[in-house]
Image 1 (cartoon, helix red, strand yellow):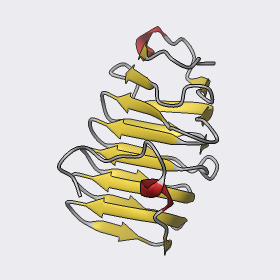
Image 2: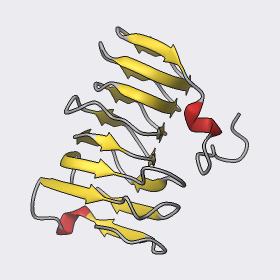
Image 3: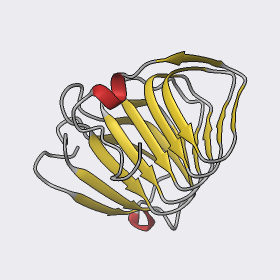
Image 4: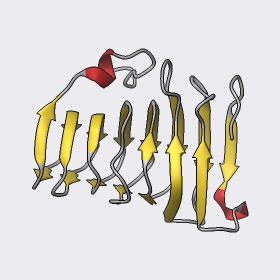
Length: 161
């Protein structure tokens, strides 16, 4: 359980279990920097951001697969490839930005996706907006929603439109 007014650095090589829950409901506006160079797949019982207000920002250093539900206001940056496994539909306001390929296998109700390579959405519903430098592919349904970029704290990096 993370507290407000504090940024965190988490080295996953010190995590002994492949399963964890990350409760960041009280960490709106805070940053969690995760060194996942020792783990390429993360199984979670849930990543929970604040239900209102500023999102929690989570940054991953290496390619990662996240299996588990993401809820609340969560902004995630990935230095490389990212896959969201189909372990429960994600809800809340969710922003994923990746310097690698992005694969989405779970439904997202209010999202913003950005990839420097490709975005692939499985046979799921996606409500939101996406921008991609490479190819965009989906077998699911796409529904426009600008809820994420209109919410406080969900800014894109300077110079990105």
